[in-house]
Each structure stands twice: as structure tokens, then as C-alpha cells.
Amino acid sequence: MSGRLFVVGLGPGSAEQVTPQALAAVAEASEFYGYGPYLERLDLRPDQRRIASDNREELGRARAALESAAAGRDVCVVSGGDPGVFAMAAAICEAVEVGPDAWRQVDIRVVPGITAMLAVAARAGAPLGHDFCALSLSDNLKPWPVITARLKAAASCGFVIAIYNPISRSRPWQLGEALEILRAILTAETPVVFGRAVGRKDERFLVTSLAEADANMADMATCIIVGSLETRRIKRPGMPDLVYTPRFSKGLPA
Ligand code: SAH
Image (tube, rainbow, N blue to C red):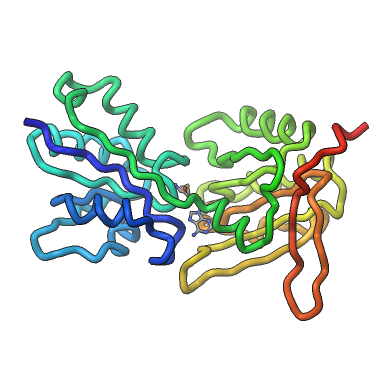
């Protein structure tokens, strides 16, 4: 008999943002697969085992977890944020599609989590109050021209854009180029929110304008929200600006 495979989102970082459903799934599994720092966040019993892997080894990790669940164990694969957003749930599905028949009999349960852009948006006010999209800036899994075409299309038709995977050591120049593309379409005052490690001890949060936004303001733990032409910044005495996108739109820019 196959075991169960829980694909669990642990939220952006703080324990309060882990759902009761995620905690229940963790309590039921005996083996835990994931990127080391995510596994560290779990409070496990002595009978529960961690199997850590590098964050670039997602497909190998997915296969190992499926193999173990197919052999009858209850297994948990963990992601930060939501497992369906640029994370392990899709890797599991990719592995099942081309894998042995036995993997199709595994009881796969995806447990959602609070994704990074929602945690960042909540800190800022309501930048995602109107239409928005999410885009990974990583060109590891798609060609760079696809990314620039999507950025241009999204910005030109009024989407607020949440940018995941903005920069890393192996991708140092892409964010700078992305900001240049956006500056050619949007106004200089367009609000831009940088939320780093939101919900963790090393959290950093910054609201700026598109004119001032700089690639140095981000690292690989940052999620950036770029406003639309309708996103606004409200000044408040002694408090950070409130960033929001009104629920109504006046239409596309001329
Ligand atoms: N599944 C995750 C996203 C994985 S992609 C989720 O739903 O949040 C990794 C990217 O997520 C990072 O490069 C960063 O852009 C973003 N991210 C993850 N955790 C974050 C956090 N606590 N604060 C800000 N951004 C975060």
C-alpha cells in the first residue's frame, strides 16, 4: 500500500504564519524532504527524519520523496511560502507525469501556505488590491526573453507585479535590466516595495519609487512588488507610507 505524500507550505518565516493544516500534516509524516533551512524550521519528534537537499535539486528531491511514499511511508515535502508558487508541488507533478506507474497511486496532498508576496503586501498596506501577477525573475528554468516579454506585457496593461527570485550570485544583472524595462513603461513615482525575509528575524522592509529602486536593495530572500500607474503612497506622520492599489481602475493609460 502506498503512503501519503504531503506537499506542505510553511509560510514566509514566522511560526504564526504556519497554518494548523500544515502542522497537522507535519505531525503525521515520518520523513521530511526539503531545502535544509526549511527543514530546520520544523519542530520534529525523535522518530521523524529530515532528509535535506540543496535548493537546486528539486526534481531529485521530488523523486526520492515519491519513491519513499510509494514504498508505504507517510512523507512530507516542505516549501517556504506556498508549495504551489515557484516551488515543490509542480516538481512533484513533473516527476509523477514521467515516473513509474506506482507513483500515480500515491495519495498526494498539497497543503497551501502564505506565499511571500502576500506577506510583503500585508506589511505595505494593499498593493495587490487590484489586478496583479507574479513573475519569477529566474532564467534558470525559462529563457530571459520570455521574462522581459512578460514584464513588458504586465506593466503595459496595468498589472501590479510581484517579482520572486529577483537576484542571486549566479544571476547578478537581470534585476537591473528588469528595472530599466519597467522605467521605460511606468512613471518615476511608481511605488516599489522590497520585502526581505519577511516574518524572520533578519526581515528588512523598504518602500521606494521606481526612479530610486536599485538592484542592490534586493537579495535572493527578497520579494519585490512593483506598483501599477494606479498604485498610491499615503504619507503618515511617524509611520511608514501606506502603499495601496485602489479597487477601481480608471482604464488603461493613453
Ligand atoms: N514558494 C515560495 C517561493 C519560492 S521562490 C513562496 O510561496 O513564497 C523563492 C523566492 O520567494 C525568493 O527569491 C523570494 O523572492 C521569495 N521569498 C520567499 N520567502 C520570502 C520571505 N520570507 N520574504 C520575502 N520574500 C520571500
